[in-house]
Image (cartoon, helix red, strand yellow):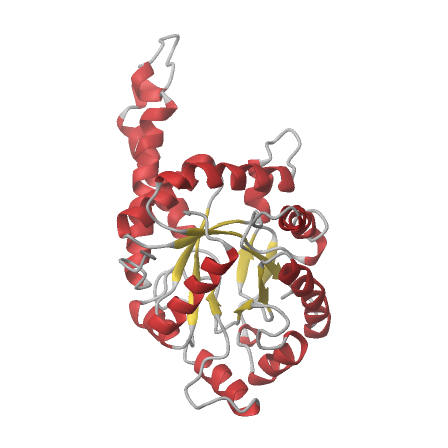
Length: 343
């Protein structure tokens, strides 16, 4: 059962919150990066999450048609087959999807899983993300309500982003300013619209200064302690015990985060952390090294034919897979998921 059933995915998230660890959510764009993510999880003895953004799915759909749904479905089906060979459990997730891409991505994928569930099967994906951070909170939550109802019926968990993450990802960008911090009022309005699980389970990408992209530690002002304030505010309003954590938080824009910032986020209810920029580099860096070291072999220079053994995609592809897998292992260590796989 390497691809989590809905029941097992819920168990994974519950275990993470109780154990104060989080699953690395690794963005993939090919069968090769998928294997790198699976290999990293297996080597770390960690369960995990594999996800596809709209841009990644479009790339997977091929440059002739660039069809996001085709790309996402194809790799998800592939993952269901190849993941059987890895001794870990993974969930499949779709990453950031803004309003103008819902009809071309998340809604059709929900329909795929709805049909599978009606036929007595499990959903194709275990969770989908709705990124309404560019909309007003009222519009954001209205769409989230519609998607949450459909997701619940299809045994899928919805991820929502209620306030912006700075920087740019797949064409969605936000300025780096004070709007990057979710307030208790934002959290209250979210619960009023989406409930606390009774309307369907959801993951919350709250903002605490997060920024997408490449940054050195200290260049982004993160306040992961804000997550504790959000949990405490909701617990107090809804009569939950002190110290309870009503939300399942997602950490976006984590590149360059310090070990202390990550640890604080884990203590305050983060169960999923997105990792894309760092694994992209870890995948590409060994390829660049190979090309520079074997310049004469990989190029047909002045009519020469080069060296097939050096430009064979399998040669440099194996190096890329190993590099990315090692970065996934590192992420599992940072997020305390290493050695925590479901037995």
